[in-house]
Length: 135
Image (cartoon, rainbow, N blue to C red; front, side, top):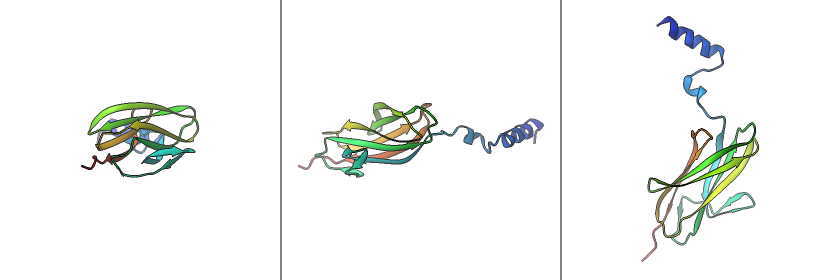
C-alpha cells in the first residue's frame, strides 16, 4: 500500500468516516412513501400499486426525516420512463410529511416518483401503474 493511501484511510477513520460513500449520503431520509388516491388530514387514503382506469389523480405521500432546519425535497414524476413533472416541497421540521399530486386520467401505464434531496441525491421512490380502460 502507498503511504498516501494509508494516510487517507487514517484521516477518514479519525474523522469518523468509514467510507467515502458514507460521506456522500444525504442527511435526509424517506421513512415512508406511498401512492394513493387522495390525502386526507395529512394521511394517504386509498393506497395501491395499481389504480383503475377511473382514477383522476394520484398523490404521492412521503415522510421525510433528518432535516436540521428548513430544507426541501423534490418529487420527480416519471411516466413510462420519461420525466413529466418536478415538484419542490418544503421540509420544515426534522420529521415532516409532504405530498404532491398528479393528474393521471387517461394515462394508463407505469409511473414512478423519485424523491430527491436538495443536491439531487435519491432518497426514496415509489412505483405504481394505472390500468387501461376496459373495452
